[in-house]
Amino acid sequence: MRAQLILAILVVASFNLNAANLTTKQQKLWLEDIDFYQNEVKTKHINPFHTLSETEFNQHISDLKNDLANLTEVEVEARLMAITGALGDGHSNYFMMSGSHQHFPLRYKFFEGTLRIVDTTNAYRSLRGTELKAINGKSVSELFNIVSPLLPGVDNQFSAKTSFEYYLTLHKLLLGLNIVKEGQPTKFEFWHDGQVIEKAIQPVSMGEFGQLSSAFSITTPKLQNTDIAMPGIRLSYFNKKNIAYFAFNSYPKFEQVVDNCTALQTELKSAQSRYLVIDFRGNGGGNFYTGLAFSSCLLPLDQFDWQHGVYVLTDSQTFSAAMSNTVQYQQILNAKVVGTPTGGDPNHYAESYRFTLPNSKRKLSLSKRYYAFAKESTDAIYPDIQITPTWQDYQNGKDTLLFEVLKLINQHKGQ
Image (cartoon, rainbow, N blue to C red; front, side, top):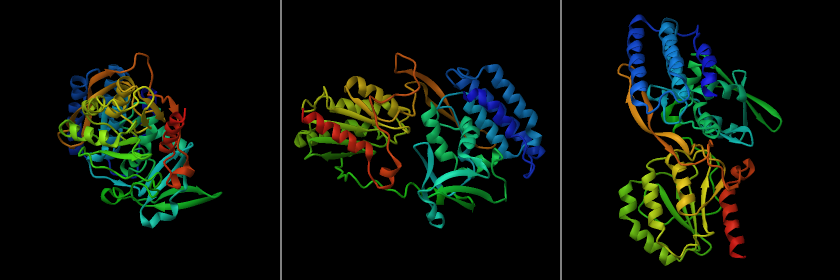
């Protein structure tokens, strides 16, 4: 689907009459970068034309070269981002943010098909919780159709939405697609309590945008973390330590897991925990061998109910190594997967080869391995028990999914 949409994107991104086109010198430098890019794709990706044919790829490159005199720099970047997106795997990416860039000061998150504003700078705090309707007259669905074929870190429909939530804030990307105009106000439309709210919003620096995450913090259930010296993995307990809950937010170093395994086993034995919950929500990946080392640390503990008492939590941000470990934990920990489908495809191209274009210094990645973790073709790990968080619970600070898992465990204990 992404390869089929690419042609429309390439045409749309070719005509910006309100910004300066590349100079002759800039064209020469970009020609060198494009040739370098083309060679890297063909020689470094393990299977570059698994989705986009080589003939189509070469034609897109040729078209881009021929159009350079009529393009601005951001349009060239959008074109390269689109061609890379058409390669069709989540580890082959053009990182537009490796150059100077700004963001609109909004954070988005999908709930029940609507795109909510979950954080803003103080200047726009009245917009928190509202629903985005349009940018410069283009609806959210229109914007998604235009932007999604270019997005990095996309394996399926679920990670596409997650990537869209972030990259819709990137001013340079929207400029390269002619959704916004350089030096002109950008008109945003929001919906709240039956009313349309219109705002002209200017982009801000990456530093200011980077301070935003979510104005709606999770407050229930309350967590009391125990330090296990594995950065990125937090241990908490529920039900008088009967349930050990690991928030596996990011990957520590392999050695940090191995070196602190004995201490973790001692901690869990002392707690006499019976049930195990491993939370991969929001985890975009790392080294799945680290995740395997973590599971091998837990497996010797006979105190856990290995038949019915292990749960793994996932969402659309569960990607790359986190998705791989989810599959592996299903197999080696006999875990039930609970939550929403993963953003990662269990049969996927992975392990990024990273490189930098010689002149523009833009950064990219290409897949150099292929992993097949599922016997049957699919696009995601679909949960054994699907639970979708609601907007109401989110804004009230309630972790819907974790509450439901704790309920499932209590129900099982009562049987």
